[in-house]
Image (cartoon, rainbow, N blue to C red; front, side, top):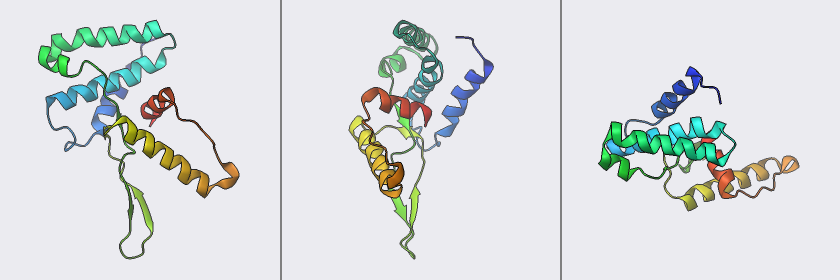
Length: 148
C-alpha cells in the first residue's frame, strides 16, 4: 500500500456526506470516522493480517485522541450507507420519485440486506434481459456499503 493524500481526503469527504441531523452526538461522529477510515484504508488491502493492522492502529488511536469512553463505545466498526430510505411517490401523479440518499448509520444488518435484495429484485424486474441472480453474502454486503 502506498499512502496518497487523496485517501485522506476521501475519509473527510465520506464524513461530510452525512447530514448534520444524522450526527446526533460525539459517539456517532466517532463511529462515522471509524467507518470511513476502515472503508478507505482497509479496503485497499488484500491480506487479513494487513486489515487487522488497520483495525489495531485505529483502536490505538481512538483512546488517545477521542478519550476512553468514546473509544469503548466505538470498539466495533458500525456500518453506514445511503440506501436505507423508502421509495417516495409523487402525490399528484403517483409516479415513483426514488428514495432519498441519506448517508446514515445502518439501521440493522437485516434491514440493509432486505433493502439490497429489494433493489436487486426491482432491477431484475425493470431489466429482465439483464437479470442478475446474485447471492448477497455478508462480505458482498460490506463491500456494497464501502463502494456506495
